[in-house]
Image (spheres, rainbow, N blue to C red):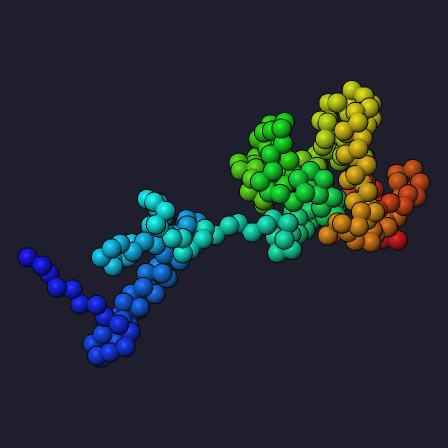
Length: 247
């Protein structure tokens, strides 16, 4: 027994137009539905029309006849200004909480990870501020790849190092090589990587690196030490126990 098949065109009787419009509406609804699903699950969506005209949608195509109609949404480039502005807000908030100058944190992140929140070094350091597993644990960072957690943990650790050494270059050296290494050497250790690290961070912090998004003109402060000595510095947070005023 042969079943007759009717082929409809875009023009013709009213009911064929209705069918076409109805199918078009259904397609749009399905497309939007999968667009939403794609936005939340980040899956590519493929379309396939079989020999009977039935349309299938899937994120697991079976063969080459499936055509991709929705591309998986990718995470935005972490180096974009939008991301950096978000990081800047977090940095300023956490830096103020721990008494750290934001521009120093910016410089550390630039050198440590170049603003890649998903960075992982060959030594196991993680995230924006490249926290080692032990450091992340000590700073109560449960997820080192969470930008806000990572930034707060790194700033908290930097505060600890500044309090311990009362000197920015030594604190930076300890951030790179570990506080014990700095103590054992009685200063910045003769390690090429550490010396270059301190130099790079200070260069960016002091505004000598033109590619630093957050370079700012350094504010100079007047510090009066306990013995009456007057010191001028752009790192007042290293002298919190002394009288500090803007110059």
